[in-house]
Image (cartoon, rainbow, N blue to C red; front, side, top):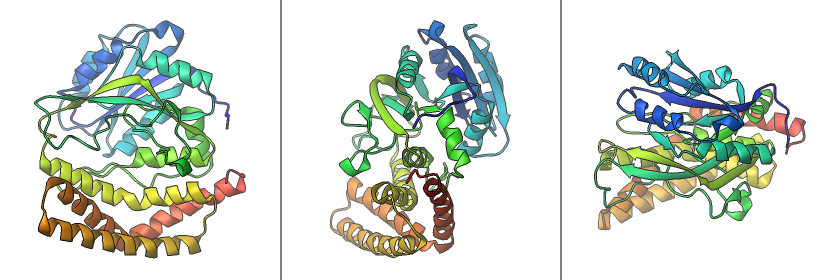
Length: 346
């Protein structure tokens, strides 16, 4: 699909940050070091997402030192939650390409230039992702971080949209470059995020980036990966703990139900409420069996891998058992699906 856009040619960089005063300066400095900015217009929008520290003032000071080529603004979003921060950023963005840079991501100098050229050359791309490399504050833990937006996102460079071939059809939100006309098209089709970032002592849930990519693919856009887009992801010692790891695995379980619903849509290209009821019963059975199996493994060999599997399985089951949540998720999904069908995308 190729869409026209009212946005100007260029890149808007969005940094949604919560209590990021200790790390935001270095993130902005890496944006200031980008090469090839003479090829396109560029702006930086920092969205302070209800921070309780002096993130706003620190971000303003860092933005004041940026090259003149990069126009910058620091905004306040009092509504907590990353989705709210990004929605504000999308609404304020002036340019056709929007690069998401987390406040602990350091973009390599050629990141924006390379991303801009790829997006210009292939107008069918809805979301473009790169290679995240972990940077550890202290020595990396033996269990190795998983789920921290690091590592290759495909077995090859290029289109990773075909989920029937085992491709992930999604890229990390961290470092992703979206096409604004594609995001606007999703809005026209009635798309609403079901998943959102949620941080807590017990559960770190997200998945909104994968959900968005799946929705873009359903609407006919390509999801693209290119290893030349390199960013470094800071891994502070405070995050490299087993408690954090298990929290992330619980989050995987929470988001599993919704993401599998999209995957079924991408595979079937045919959906109905009747099918989603069957999908719920199958999900309940699989989640129950997975929890029992993982629990038995932990009884005999309680290593980190098995504990992670159990944490994920338990919260997958708890999510499926939350019937009101599953009903709301199904309604949102089917509302979007009906519009896709009406406009002959599926």
